[in-house]
Picture 1: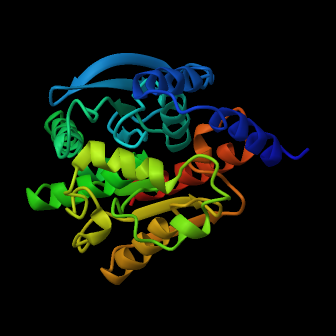
Picture 2: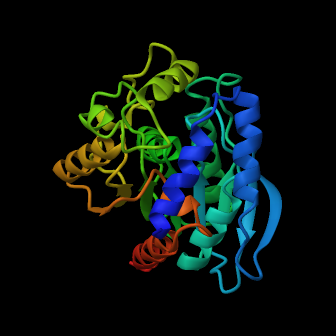
Length: 294
């Protein structure tokens, strides 16, 4: 059995049973993330950025005047700095940057726009600490990928300088879910479903799903930072990524889109399960280095 088929069997087993309550899903997701090892020499400390808890992750050789502000996925309801510690550490190592994994407030305890407010506060805190905007990358996966783009829109709205770049993994940028792939990839995607995303969107922002800070696909993307987008070909969020690349390009934002054949949603997370995760992380690291040095 191929590596990807082994992963698909694992995902079928994980998602084939009854749906867990959100508090149990939070715990299970965090435990899965924490089961992945960190790069050798990685050091993790708890910090706050603009009053928002975060993990600071330093790997050997990281440039101390840089920052990777990472916004975890989980549909704005699950996920945490801890669940994504291994992924942030791997990306930080690949880009020779200092990682900051943000524990932004989650729904339903804190609804939209709490997550955007927290991400903006953290970015402002990095600037206030003396890190130049052109030495900061903002990145995130799934909901965190959408939050990455929404944060760039919020940065533009308050007239702060844009970061060096934005990296969106399998981004959820249209909470109205109007793309074709929600139906076309429904059987292929073993992680996300339209019904579950509808439930999470309702918890996060209720009837305000079309707000550009909730669904940044509908925002004015002109003037935001250069954008790297990774997405798997078998995702229901494929059309979100494709339309984001098209609309950002139409707004004259430098865009690089990578579609990985047969890859599942946020395959980067599976650092021990998929060699393709390491390949994608290395590609993202090279892109970060290119933009931080430009």
